[in-house]
Every structure is written in structure tokens, then in C-alpha cells.
Length: 101
Image (cartoon, rainbow, N blue to C red):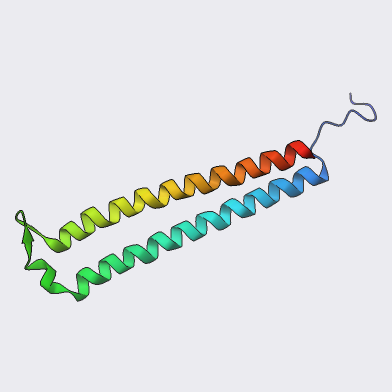
């Protein structure tokens, strides 16, 4: 049984910090996801609206396939790396605020 002054639950300021971190991470995820979707749509749009790319072959492979294969996958890896870096920075900022509180 807990007596007065032994409450180890989260304080109001810690709750505010956690909610702020969650909002920050959600905002970051939405920005990264929408940026990836827009860039992918641009890649697909180039392939769809430039059918001449199918006629150009590099090592027997149409340029449109190369564009999708070597354009979208590096884009996904780059977006993922940027997300992890920014999310880690958000969490480090949260930890420093939580330690000060």
C-alpha cells in the first residue's frame, strides 16, 4: 500500500512530454510517408507518360524498368534512413527534457 508522497506514477509534465513525443513522431511519419508516396507517383508518372523509355534498352533491360528498380528502392532506403535519424533526434530531445523535469 502506498502512503502519501510515494506516488511513482507519471507526473503531469511527463505526460505532456510523452504526448508531445507521440505527436512529433506521428507528424514525422506522415511527412516521410507522404514524401515517399509523392516521389513514387512521380517515378510511375514518368514511366507512364514517357512510353519511349520502353524502347530504350540498357544491357537488354528497358530504361523504364531500370528507373523503377534503381529509383524507387534507393528512395525507400533514403526515406527510411532519414526517418530513423529524425525519430532518434526526437527521442533524444524527449529524454533530455524528461531528465530535466
